[in-house]
Image (cartoon, rainbow, N blue to C red; front, side, top):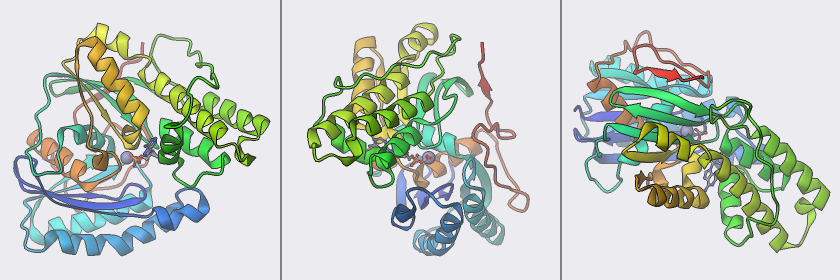
Length: 349
Ligand code: KG4
Ligand code: ZN
């Protein structure tokens, strides 16, 4: 494979990485915008674009110092269009000026590649033939089945994403943005059985999730029990553990059925919520019970990063995908079937 520069700017992290021909990480750097958005309690799109404009040229100068990439891979969607365009235009200009190979990458394809990567210089692992993959982040929550080069979505959230649900509940609780990691920390000292949240009933057999009902129930509970306005640290910890358990429970609920139906050799987890302690442990336990290997991404590769985009770019290039840097554009849609990429078929029953 080609030595690859990966560029990621879809949301609130500017990130670049350089991968060697076997997917080994040669360089990676990330500039987080969390401090810039924290006062607003969430990502401000216009601010995000401006922060990418400031950070990306500096990161690229560092990455390219003495390096000769052969392929440039950049996230083209889904994400914030203004932010995506900053990365895309920088990447396209570089590819055009240096006559380099160029490919646009789906952000979710990036996340899905992350469990196979290592930050300590080892080559990327090659996936087996049948992989069951859970992606859970601030914008997406879906299960996929990959069989060779074919990929299909088995289940997805009907409304909020898992991380979005935790972030919104945490905001009402008065936690700093993003609340997901803070809830994770609080939950470690809490009792997940203290508050029971009802599983939403989705009327078909799809295995789809819904987090917006859980979010509303949790917010009602915070107000009723005044959990946002209490000195009772145990109450807050118990609440955090309970909401976390409800989210993890929903995400893992369809797993047994999927394993029975599709007989995977490997189960992977990725996306920002893949950093969550209870989700990681829950999936490892399920894998042990089912006798199937579970591959988790390194914690540092769970948030948006350039390494996963570079690797997804290498794999896309190997599959024959190519883009013209003069014609590449950004896409904001949450569910995106990129032209020419491997088919992500929604298996609605
Ligand atoms: O993948 P990501 O960096 O951005 C998107 O593509 O959305 O995911 C960010 C999401 C946020 O919702 C954040 O609260 C959540 O991942 N997150 C966590 C943890 N770390 C990040 N949620 C639960 N537990 C964590 N440890
Ligand atoms: Zn992401």
